[in-house]
Length: 121
Image (tube, rainbow, N blue to C red; front, top):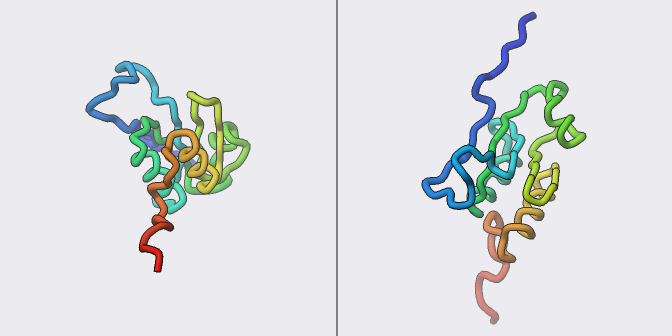
């Protein structure tokens, strides 16, 4: 059986203005994800909402073939982020969302509805 490797398994989110990065610098966050994974999409939305530069690495759909994620994070599940700025490697979307909010956010979570909507009666 011949293994076929996808040539486009990574991409880098680019911005028109990248004042904090040189042209050749890698983004500080690597995001391991699976195409169509709702947990991964939740993390991607938050990364985009906070305008964070990141590199996406799409992993193998077969759980047992996700060796790159296992090497990086010790698990085969996605999403996983590696943040070179802080030295953090983290799995599980809820943990990642909390980390991104705490580290890069301003106290509110743009991916969740506000609990203060409405007024006092």
